[in-house]
Length: 224
Length: 224
Image 1 (cartoon, rainbow over the protein chains, first blue to last red):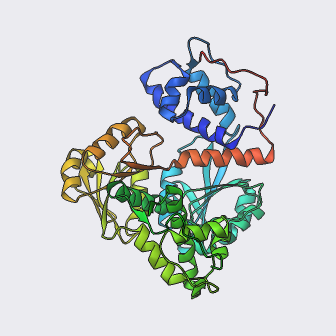
Image 2: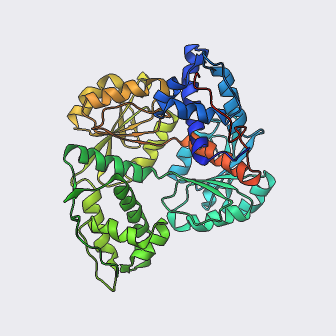
Image 3: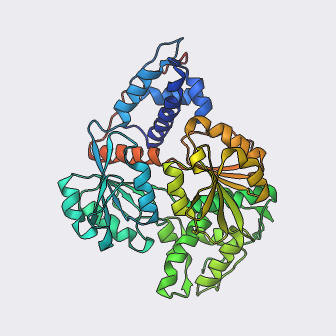
């Protein structure tokens, strides 16, 4: 028995999405190389990752699509509904509310927080908004362990520390700030603006390769 | 002279966000270790990356915040305005429109596409919506090189291939599908649902370490 590495879990989440796309086709069995081709990993990698689920498949036939999905859900998903809080109901926060509400059956957006008094008491896409001053109470009342962070950069670290003090164990961070948090907390960063900037940069670079001004032998001044 | 690696560009985008957070403090100089602490890399890494910009800083004093930001913008940003298209104006697409419009001065959301006739002709957050049948014309007319993809998974590959045929060079892909595209196209994947699932998984794992059923000596059947 061993703990499953983070990268394996990340790949299993991806395989699940690939399988879910196969369901409407009425397909009953899938082979490791079908998943591998979509996920851009080797078939051997897929087989090793799936072994971590404890589902063995039928040698010569492959994996039952539904059985494999069930094993994945059992492994990845919370056994019971989990409550999620969103902090920061600005443009991005509202957008995330619209997108995330009802998306995963076991992940319930239970509360949104903002410091704008005009938003206190609103229900946005079925999710009630509270003033930030009520974070401690509401998070405790609903036993919320997961938070989505969409606050201004300047307050992100402070809000994250408060969330953890109130009992949150995992943060999906949309703020372009690297949070410094104790290791028992899991953080995933998504920086939409930076990703778009990189797409723009490399789209241009693909047309006319961008050159750097640092030549191979040049030294870097360490007093900076 | 050499091409700048993708990871360097990604870090430079991150450093820029960190610097932008320092601007309101009225700070004039910054040292590599200040940026490094925020970006969670070594100061030597920061100095090497900044050398790629051709901006040298003042040894003993550090980098001028504004000068460094200017060098970064010159390096990262398009010299002229770039036009961006969004494909798929569902929940996520609308959310992205609300978030991205006006966010980066040189990246203009010029057109959105959807196959719902009810959306054809709408202007959402200042961005006009067109029927997908007009993709070729509109992309050519505005010389759009960058696309944000937020369509249903089943059509993502097909839409991406069309975009490239019409001249798009870079795609920010929010669809949980790995696109198979020719190498001259740069793709960045953002999968919000999978990220939230991982946060949920690891938040639980942090509380009670989740175990795998694959023991170290166990073999994986390669006929699957």
